[in-house]
Image (cartoon, rainbow, N blue to C red):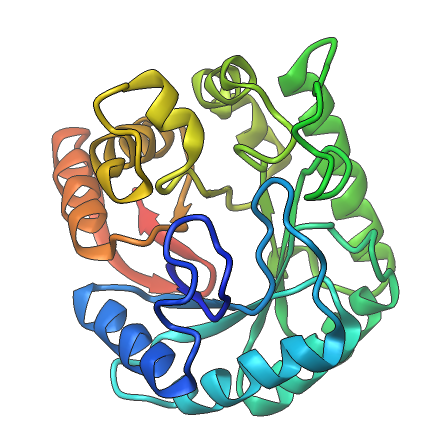
Length: 275
């Protein structure tokens, strides 16, 4: 899953692709690198990020989704939003997956839209909301609590008419978690596979990698940590990898798959790696 940020304030590449033409070109380049899903977002969810109104978010992502939908390479388009109005415009423009970091808590009506359109969705765990999520996050057992949350949100999605096979789950690395919480989730990721749905991992360029490897303070320098965490996640059962550096991570995962005796194939539906 290649990241296409259409925002001026994302932590890793804010402002680089804010113009629709630049964002579309970037998305097409990610497809050439091997992305099978393009995740288009118009509102930053970095720690401390300020919310964006629906009209502004639509103005940012609408032309990009339309420009990428049906483009050469056959990548699916995901819309990274928690807003009903934004998702509706994106689905109309050709998106087929809604990636909601609030897991349908921000606007519960979004679940009915996904069900009505027969779209896929990704439901993520987040403690609080972006402006406050990193303010002293605490858990009894982070893995147990994230697992229980994802199970409950999966049940809610199904109750709203979304077919279970259309749901992906994301433990929300970096969303209301300390460094140790992130590492514990990665160590015990196999416990989340018991939920029976594809797991999405989003560690790409995140700040905790810079704290673990002091030689990589800036987002662009965190590729080695990104690769390491995605390889570990794949070994523990993750199947969808949300990244900025598609080519490098895909190559690393292909080698990992071969080493583990698995076969790396083009995706069918929501998953990208198969045994």
